[in-house]
Amino acid sequence: MLQRVDSQIARRASLRQLQVFEAIARHGSFTRAAKELYLTQPTVSMQIKKLEQSIGLPLFEQVGKKIYLTQIGDMLMQTATDVLRSMANFEMAVADHKGLKTGSLKLAVVTTAKYFAPRVLGRFCARYPGVDVALKVTNRESLIDRMNRNIDDLYIMGRPPGTDEYEFQSFMDNPIVIVGPAGHPLAAEKDIPLHKIAAEPFIMRELGSGTRMAVESLFEENQLRLKVRMELGSNEAIKNAIAGGLGISALSENTIDFQAEKELARFDVQNFPIPKKWYIGFPSGKQLSVIAQTFLEFMKGDIAQQTQPRTTESGS
Image (cartoon, rainbow, N blue to C red; front, side, top):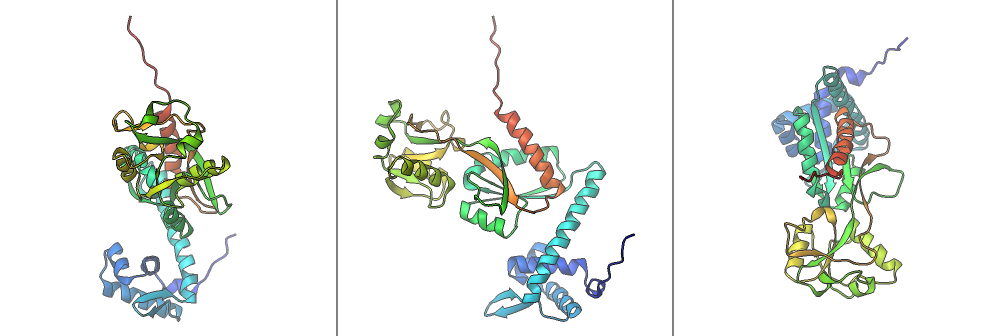
């Protein structure tokens, strides 16, 4: 027999008040929370005032122009997050039982994944038009920060953190290749020794980039060092710099269409391509929503279909 769960606070506090509180705590701003929830700022302030009266303790404190959670506010944030996530999952489960797929999906990816993630999301939305999708493209450091704060449903990166705090699974190859100007003397050579390529000026992503870490690790294993001439914040900027003759780089093969980008060439270098993988994951212990689970299953099948070899028939 189920036991009755009684809570004095639950009798007085509303789900809407928890939603307003969670948005303020997440944004660190009453104004941004009001904008997200399509409410006026006075309405948001009144909801928090009523919630604090129900609890009997302040939830926020202001220091200068910034607001911070009090100790009890921090405890309530954990509870509010669990309650709101459970309600969202329940809503999606109801829709699922009705034969529908409605709800929301928040996906965060490293910048290199922007070359394929939007296409996968497009095909997913075409199958499930009732799903609202938010895609955040950022660098590796910011992505890990978002994971630690549990902002999104799923995360895609090329080199997940090697700890048991996260659950990641590979879903697609991500080979790292050496790319240079098409007119470079090395573009026509075969089996270029690694020490020879190490003498070339490199254009690389910022420190902490998954691709850069993989390349630096390979060079260190061979007692070589990258000759980094320039650091740029995007793969497009790197490709433009290569085309301009500023150096060579190591990039994910997924980011380049050599048939279309004729100014670029893939160099035939020993120890390359570096066989990497793309991974999708989430913080350990996180309960995935119905939509997130659906996307995981969809993506695995979609990627397998898109990457399978295509056969052609020759006429007689």
